[in-house]
Length: 169
Image (cartoon, rainbow, N blue to C red; front, side, top):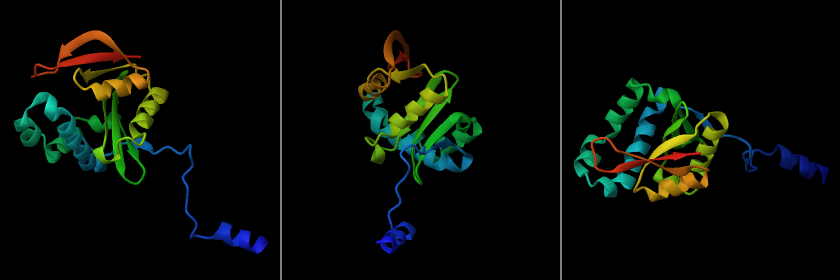
């Protein structure tokens, strides 16, 4: 019996289970820019096309290469964190007390990645507000589940007739 237990414990064929407390969140780097842009472009097309009804923007202006360049050139990667378990599946961008962006790749939604990112931000940074498109009910519900509440403060999304609503915690 001791020999069998030793064989099992030393076997490379056994499945490796990740530590439950292990974090998959890390700071973004320039090397991540194309994957970040890919997530952003696809997520924005999926979520916002029906709200803004602007195909010229969604499929003309909103392209992976220009988004990646913009994020590098404007320093947006400096305050961005990624969920990366071998595949970059989600991102959150923070500036001071504000969550600027939180996106999870469409194929990995519903797996707790967004929750892990927002909880990471709440635990490690003094984030206490964000702006969401008023018609993005799914996002508003998500943030409410994580302790953010709608306020009466609204403003127009720049260049559109759609409102952004402030959420605070």
